[in-house]
Length: 346
Image (cartoon, rainbow, N blue to C red; front, side, top):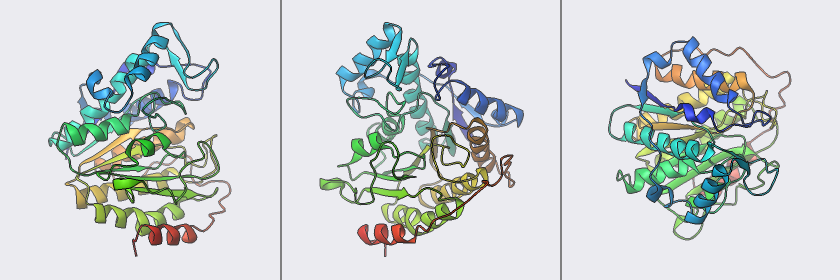
């Protein structure tokens, strides 16, 4: 079983050393993967910039040009001076290649070159809208990959599962009226970006093709296990995707500074294992992970390591951080009941 990854060194050149989303996130991932001899056992995919004609199928040309010009001028805040969504001098090229890396990963699993693939990319993408970026995101990598699968490779149905701490508001907006892409997001409720209520289900022909699971602070491994069994797996089985894409954010970990969910590395590994089994059962194993958030460097790196080890047949999970010092684990049963009723998953 071939496992692939897509990485380009330019992803490290999108950088602000004082920002929480900086190059050492990806450097630590690569260091841990090399320490555990992962990269030598996986297929390295060549990465090219996404062609502009495909980029502009998702993003408006004026927005793309604005990012290019800002990078050309040396960078700055994307939307206003001091904006936390930053652009550096190499960010435009890095963002083009990040989207291209996701396309390479999608093509590899679709065409049978690999069974699973992980796009180890920066800048992240799931908060990027057609006409603007926010939340540290410039172009929406996973949306571009899904659109590539649909329009270039012929996939009829694509499912995106987003387990980042934050709701993927950009991804939701892009596919909100599209019945061919099932978007499902788990996220902490009450924090940025403030969207993703369980009543947000899509519109027009896309009604029902958006599923949101907004979570209270403290939901940990057990809560995610319940959500998977009661909502994620039944929704996937009904939709019958031909490829499963995952916005993989590792900030639900209990140590992450931006959130209050209390997952462990072992819990994130269990979620990866279930998603992998789901892909095997429904879409011939075609599974693509796309890196999103995660700001505790060790949790991020060991979460990514766990995914590769599972895909390479390793049974044990390396979790140096262990359980959270406190775990309230509020019930998700009410949320599950509401979502199952709304989406007719009874």
